[in-house]
Each structure stands twice: as C-alpha cells, then as structure tokens.
Image (cartoon, rainbow, N blue to C red; front, top):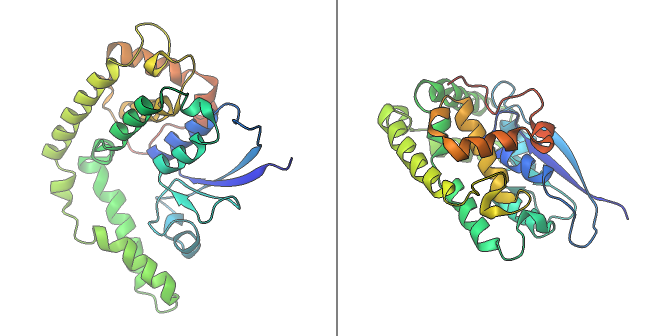
Length: 260
C-alpha cells in the first residue's frame, strides 16, 4: 500500500508547531493499518518571513500562520494545530483512546484558550517581532508588481493587527493577568495527573492532550516562566521532555528564539 503523503509546514520557534509535531511523534499505529508519510517544511517566520510569501498565503494558509498541512487526502489545506490534531486523532486511536475522548477534548480546549501569545511574547519580546512582520507586509503592499490576489491576501493578513495597541495587549498588566490564568489552569492539570510516573488521566501512554500540554510547559520554561511550573507538573514535564519522541522533535532547539 502506498503511503498517503502529508506535508507539514512548521516553524522552529512556533509553539503550535511543536504541539502538532509532538502529537505526530506519539501518534502510534493507525486504526485500519493505513500508512501515512510526512514531509516537513520549515517556515521561517522571523527573517525570511516565508509565511508572507505569495505561495504560502494563496496555497497553504491565507492567515499566514503555522502549522498547516496539505495532502491529496484533503479537499483543501488545513491550518490550526487543534483542528489538525483532531483530524489525525480520527486515524490514530492512541491520540484519543476510547472512553477518554471527552476529557482529552476538554483539556485541549483549555490549553488553546490560554493567552499563550501574551505568555510567550509579552512586554519587550512582542514589539520587534510583530512590528517587523507588520512592516514586511506594508513593504510588500507598497510594490506595484504583485498580483491582485496576493495584494488582497496581504491586506487581509495585515488588517487585524494594523492598529494593534502593543502596550495594552502585551503590557505588564496583561502579562500579570495571563500568569494568573495560567496558574489556575495548572491547578486543573495537577488534579488530572497521576501521583507517580504516567500521563494525563493515568493513561499508559501519552495522548493528544499530553502532546499539547508538554509543548506548552516547555515554552513557559523557555520564556522564563518556569517558576510557575511546580511539583508534580514539573516532574511530569521533565519526564516527557526526556522521551525519545520529544527529543526527535526538538533536536538541539528550544521552543522559542526569544529570551525570557
């Protein structure tokens, strides 16, 4: 049987990219024996800003974000790490074991409702990154040699952030509030971890919820918020980050280019 090919577009410092890539690393066998192959394509979101290219905006993700996947098996490209995870969970039962689907979905939603943009890039970290990306879009729009479709895509990408108030969205108070939300979430997590070695909901192997949670915890550590990760949760994160699957995704990288 010829494997069904998937192309995974990701960035080496994108939290959601790590969530998806670790999900794929721990996916286990498929439910019907189907074979799937993955080709990874790195998207440079800070220097070359490949996510703003005409090809990416028109053929991969009009939002200009990673991760995203393409495949002959899909009617159209799929973006958003949670949607993609749910897609693969229909193929790989270990991602959402029978009887635990509700708990896993609840945890995934809680993770993706966290203000991890502020937690990752609050304060001084946000402005040079986002302002640089905004200026790159404006520079492209100032050209007179781009296609109408590309111009429309750039305008749609720029519009939501064109008038962003950085001081309000990523300021000190926003960061403090985000940390309070994270602390409440971590209390919720602690109640769902086994007291000894193991995974969420006392499952024998990691599920999709573990994949997204471990990536989140790694990011919080890498941006200087590791003090919020305590006790059993810290031990859980350290065990996961020592696994072969996590190491196969991370290599020598950390989850972010930005210092804490």
